[in-house]
Length: 120
Image 1 (cartoon, rainbow, N blue to C red):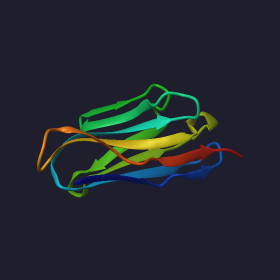
Image 2: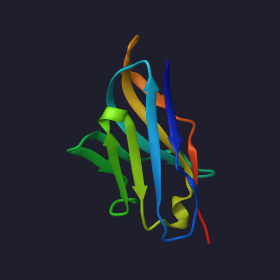
Image 3: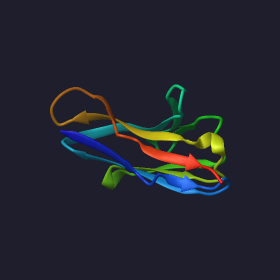
Image 4: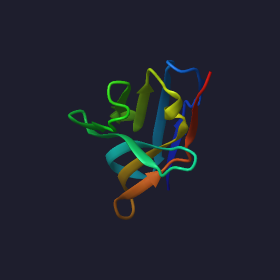
């Protein structure tokens, strides 16, 4: 089985920073890509940032210049450094791993989410 687990969420004042982590573990053959999504109350889940390789990274316009995605390939860990946080960044943040398990087809695996709240 494959597990995807996020951590690092919390309550931060506007202008503050947080660093989210996501670890993919278990019966993994190879990871194709990893990404961060978020879902605010009453809204659809949206893509925040994608890591395909060190030269293939993409961000939502709303977070460009404030968020930085990075990955530790050796540890199958994805990070999201979030700076200059705004109240509109408040959401549950989810990690998605697009990977090949040791047995089965390539598919997406999702974490359970971590709450990020920006409020004074």
